[in-house]
Image 1 (spheres, rainbow, N blue to C red):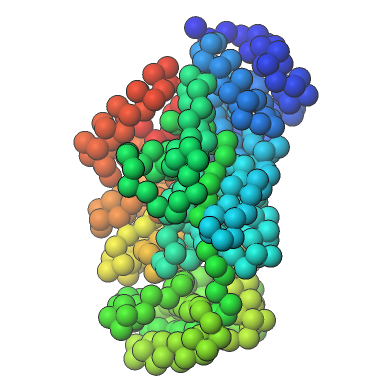
Image 2: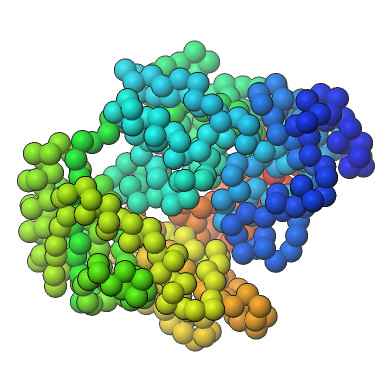
Length: 470
């Protein structure tokens, strides 16, 4: 049976350092929010926050939660966009802000062991000194944590070639709902692959802290390609971008990234950075190739030759300063959209659909029509190479009717993704926001997920209200 907040906080102070337990209302307030629009509209404040420094601290907190029947929510940096790190029922939030060590970088075996609170950007900087990198590259990389990435199976522009986070988690230390600890992927393993037993690592990756809590991750890393180049291509019609990408695949070329900018995104960027001189037309692609300098010099020209069959104009950047300038434009879309739509604010809702590549044009066109019908401004772009279509919805949050229409648009976008054979989330996770769509997307497989959840967490204390609705 659940006990009072004061009793839970007192119990926690008995088992972890008292200065790592937060229950002051003002200090708890930031833990009520993440980047989701959902969390901004109704304060959902935890009863208490624990900031552990070790696996033992996490175990102690989980045991208190188990003993007292208190909900428990793991939290990284709070950059998530689906309410996944929010405590909708109160209870304990475990913040991993103090568990951010790199325990080992093993260059010869292409792996590293880290704590879950380590920020992605800091990890990349550390790997660079060893000639290595971690391929998944979320847009929130300067702030998000590796534990959060693993919990949500995050990715980014490089997923088309390198895959998502799940491909790079070799093993983990996981605290289960009863406070026991297991190591997945082999207790002493340094292997890069295994066919031994059920792959429990994959079970936990993407489960958003609903089955167990990561306290250590063994991650695969890769040699960093020494050179890269970017082709910028303009297209008269969205359909031509799909055909152009298919041309590349048919020629045996898999670019490291293929980023799409819809006309709405191009127009916004042109206002923000007119010196970029982005091509006219309905869409622009950023196509990146990488390898040795010699390979890149040849590949960028070969790729450009294929792209020119469909594109109205192309140009490419080989100098690292020019490449960085182009990617800075892509990453500056948030600032650009704010400039293009004064008085509006971007909200994260229906923002990371993923659809079959062949369905991208009709998805964007129908999404545009939905936005126009509801009178909502939307900017479209995406990780084109793996079908991720991002919809940046812009609203005046002080206009209740506009907010209502934006909610309706987000709902329609989620349903559209399922209708065309896609998913409601390509990289940001299910959380609380998308739980209602799980039945429509997964059918009877959702019941199996619920059965696994019930076995792993019979009291339903781990990150309740996420994923398993519908």
